[in-house]
Length: 220
Image 1: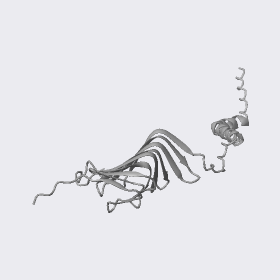
Image 2: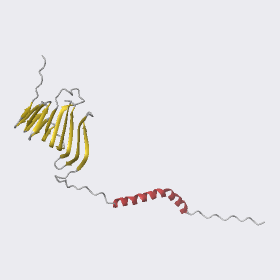
Image 3: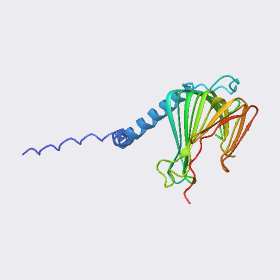
Image 4: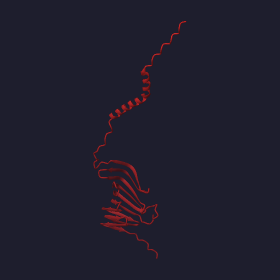
């Protein structure tokens, strides 16, 4: 009886086969690293945004302009302090000037319960908003705040002229040109004006004319 021949030995598994299996596990990580390096190289070659010019604007050049605007400012307690509206607003950073055409300015004094409403063809003020220069058909009305408790306590005061300077921090109104002042039913006209808001004192100079309405005598 012939013996059964033994099966031929299986060929040895190549060593690189196991190595390839191990490398295939890290292949996605290697590809991501290569992609990150390529992306970084591309980004480095892209030119950055152009730097803003360091040259300051000339005195007559505004850095921003608004048309048909409304600006509201609020006090620290959240109450409305002022409203500025106009046709055109331009800000000139070279001298810190704010210029408004066809301006209307409303300021509210909550402590004194007073409101000041000013209109003019042109309004100019500084960045701190402490002094306002009004020009052209100026009309300024100072009256008791309609929503206050003393709305009927103080007579209405109206100033009309072509120029008027209002020092908000000093509570002072000045004009070096003719002004018409109307307080209640009384009217005064002078060449120059200095009005102290705190004390309610008007100082008219030059050729002064006054029209005073007689008041009824108080009943005894």
